[in-house]
Image (tube, rainbow, N blue to C red; front, side, top):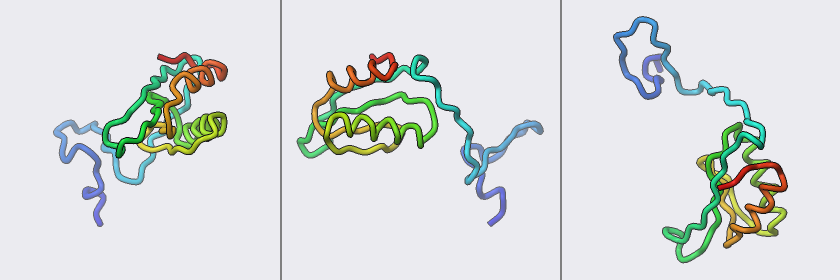
Length: 110
């Protein structure tokens, strides 16, 4: 497969200095320190078969760091959950508990 077929987003640009982004290239994102994160915690019920979940959004950093935070929150709450699409999804309604845990870890929470 040619390199032109693997371009992400832009098919063609008239700018000779434009830097195309290609599939397989990882964008390097450093994880912000906890004090600079602006995490949002919310409860979701719709589209989940009647089940309630707590969602943590807006984490800026690597996928490994997001997984580590998700694992910590799931362990402290004693429930299951997952990390996908840049969100931490915790099974059940644990908004207050998660906000408290995140504040203890140094994250400002909305």
